[in-house]
Structures are given as structure tokens and as C-alpha cells.
Image (cartoon, rainbow, N blue to C red; front, side, top):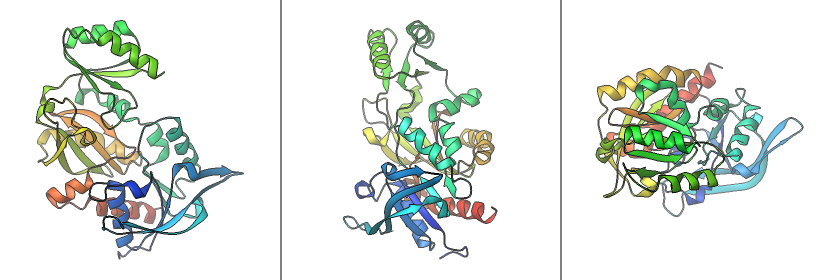
Length: 319
């Protein structure tokens, strides 16, 4: 139990029954909240409702513990007016689609009286692959387009490129296109047929073979990093597609990147953020449901979950 008053915490997330308790960041944050004396109310995004000015959710009070097969105990189902909660954790996984966007609009109606983490306005207005464009000096050459001529010109200039959905996640739909690869036109047809928004192309960074570093920032401050190393024959390092987590040191360049973006994250109420860095190049700023804190704690002993709650408690105390 900490010196702060206990907080009533609601968690908007995907089914908690399905989480890997040894890897899931939301589960670790919930465990830490409970250890600090805070109460937990859990609900699914589909159970969120707005009616006549009130934002409610149907869910259960829960208790969590680090025991496989018995990691959550549920109370009775009940409806809660979320404006009566102290904190709502916005922790559902992408895709960042209109369903996700709509939940940010709804949660904005109770924030900041009820502190929503991360700030729903800035979650909505800071898509991972677009927010990095505010820091062009830190990023790889990037193109967002639906235009085939623009895509071909970008590949002609840079040779090897990566093409991926603008709002994708977990490495899904990420394609490596080499110089002279004859599949680019077909890939363009597939992307424009599946999505109405532009897609993104970036210059391929060969340093990805050494790993795609996930750096964790809490309230704008870097607290540590893990490396994600691609499987043999893969250009993607995401853990969802076979990447391997490994211990890694932060470099001077990593810290320069964090110092450049940290004030913006703090100002926008983006308390828990994970950035992706390949060979000293910033590729994404993940604000929706970042991961990596359990691996960081195992490798380096950094209790990022505690640091997250210290930041939340401080914001609550300061109004």
C-alpha cells in the first residue's frame, strides 16, 4: 500500500481471460494497482454506453494474481457510471479503427475529472505511424499515399522499402519490397482494395536484423528498453510474429530521441508510451496500448508498472 489514497480504477481492455500473464502489460499494471491498494473494475469496450450525458460501463470488480489458470477472480456484473471513477485505463488493443476512435470520443466526456490514461483526445489525434512525422529529423524517409505513381517513385529512389497499413499493428500486413520486386503493383491493388485510407511506405533499415528496440517512456521520461530480434528470414521483429525479446542498453542516440519527444508526450497526457527505434532511427510512437514492461522488468529489474502508477497518482494529486 502506498501513501496515496486508494483509487477506484476502471480498465477498458480486451478479454482478460485470454492474456499471457507473463507478458501482458495491462495485467502487470493491474497487479501493481492492486498492490498499491487501488480497486479494479474491468469492462470490455462493447459494454461502454453513453445515455443522456452519462457514460456507463457494464463489467465486474476483479482481483488479479500471478497464477496461471487462476489469474483473475470476478465479482458480480454491475453497471458503473465512469464519471464516479478516479482513473480509467484505456488499454484495449488495436486495430485503431472507428470503433477505437469512438471510444476515445466517449471517454473524453469524463476526462480529466476522471483521469483517462492515456488522454483519449491525444490517443485519437496521435496515430502511431503519423505522430512520428512531427519529428522528421529522427525518422526514416517515409511516404503516406494511395497513389501508385508516388509509391513507384519512392521505391525507385530508395530501392528496398517496407509497405504497411497506416493503422495496422503487431506486424500484420507488413511487406518487404526489394529493388526490382515485381509485386509492388499487386501489393498496391491489395492495400487499396482492403483499406480506404492511405498506406505507409518507409525506406528499409537493414539494421533491423540487429533488432527493433522498444523504448518505454513514462510521463515523457525514458525508463529503459528491450530489443526485439527478428526470426531468421524475417524483416519483422514483432513478438506476435516470432520476434525474440532480448536485453539491450539504451544508447546516446536513443536518449536524444527520447529527450526530443518527451516534452510533447508529457504535455499531451500520454503517460505510458513505447517507441520503436531501429539503428538509431525512430519508426513509431505507440500510444494506444504499448507493451514491453514485463520483459523490461525481467531483464533490468525496472518496475515500469510502479512508475506508471506514480505518474498517475501524482496527476490525480495535482488535480
